[in-house]
Amino acid sequence: MIRVGILGCGSIARQRHAYEYSLRQDVEIAGLFDLSRERAQEVAAKFGGRVYESMDAMLADPTIDAVSVCVANAYHAEATIKSLNAGKHVLCEKPMAITMADCEAMLEAARKNGKRLFIGQNQRLTLAHRKAKELLAVGELGRVISFQSTFGHKGPESWSIDQSANTWFFKKDQAAFGSMADLGIHKIDLLRYLVGGSVIEVYARLMTLDKKFPDGRPIEVDDNSVEILTFEGGATGTVTTSWTHYGDECNTTVLYCEKGVMRLYMNPKYSLEIIYRDGTRVHYELDKMQTNDDAQQAKSGVIDTFIDGILSGRPTPLDAEDVIHSMRIVFACLESAEKGTAVKIG
Image (cartoon, rainbow, N blue to C red):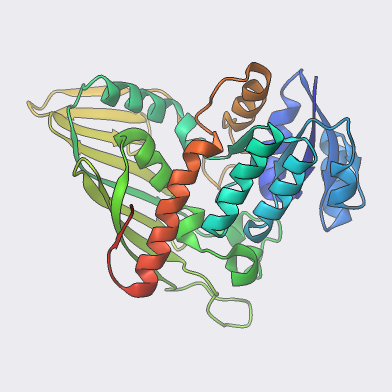
């Protein structure tokens, strides 16, 4: 039996972490902490677990084996490092941390303490993305030449626990990033997973086009972004993110390859489509992309990967040792947007 603690009891903790832990017979939610005791008590009432007075008190409990870090971005590193130093395995929500130095310190803490660190990059786990990687790996479509990937929805205020335009996602001191790192990290990480190899250059533009605080001030982070990524093999394409898609959510990827085109989550029935050069079409009806409009998030596979990784000791797609390379690209995009120039990644 793995006994887990959850740090932060907002929407992601309720709709994914606690919910998915509750589906496993070999996991017990043992501890909960949130700055709002009321929020922690609400999660405890639904899923079980003891509500602790502080993060340190929960981490001092030697019976807790693993921790989910579901706090605001700015506190990921502190909560993760403290948890690892307390001898716990950690699943940290994305983005991994708000500085590259923090990401590296988190990884070093895991190594020093002999514990596993996982990052919740759930898009690596969807059935269509896994099938796409399998097909690309065997050369079914040849080399990826270019790509476009988009992630856009109405904005985190419609889903986050506060359900208002005063959400921490819009505040620089707590979120650090806007849509580019909140949504773009998913697509940047996914493209690394699918295309393979390293991104060697980025060019990015971050914009605040529409979102405002309740008093009418523009939010402090970007609500839209565009990134151009170039891989070492030459593949070049775009990632676009938006918190201002005020209709249906868009979470799609298209890969233009030597032997045809691969479309992911563009067709509501077929999550993976291939159009070969001769016009032949192949459709895969595998799964549906979960959206923020879902009342209850579909099972993501993140918790299963975390727990199974701990129990087996085997590498997983969510290991921080790999995900940290996606964060390097995120920080290069931030640098590019600040400088207004392309940035090379060594």
